[in-house]
Image (tube, rainbow, N blue to C red; front, top):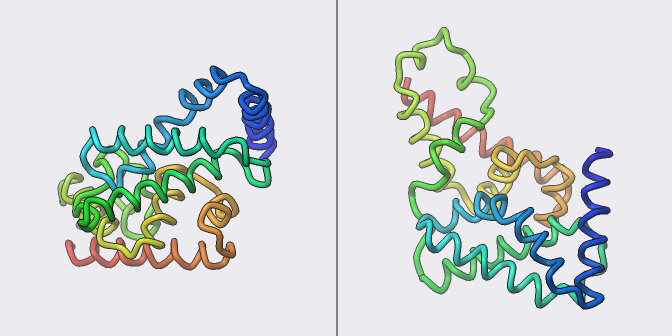
Length: 194
């Protein structure tokens, strides 16, 4: 956790520089977090150009709100909240449901489903990896929003339960339950494939 702590400290120092009027310091935060935000936004906003727009809009909102940032939570936790809300607003504006195929197939490789995903001696070894990835993508995109956010932050952003609880503004136990339910839904679908 020490490394996270030092990252938070560095971010806070940069934020303070921006708050004191050094606008160019904000570029450091943009460069540091733009790819992470893009991965976070992808499950909501499937079109790559739109992803970039939503990420850019998130940074603009963050920049405007920065004078009010007091460091009560880590900067990136605060930034991720803004990005999630911006994504939701984007979807509302588009008045459409989240796309059915969501997370990049490449990202799906990082999914750690426990039970079915890791036992190569079972029949799913005969299934194409692509078929499994497609199933995972489809299940995640169909999950209720709170499960989708939790599993995305955990599996694709490798965040701790505490960090996710902070972002989602709920108890850690709720986060564990949501991630469990999301994994269970994915496992069940993969079992159907077999």
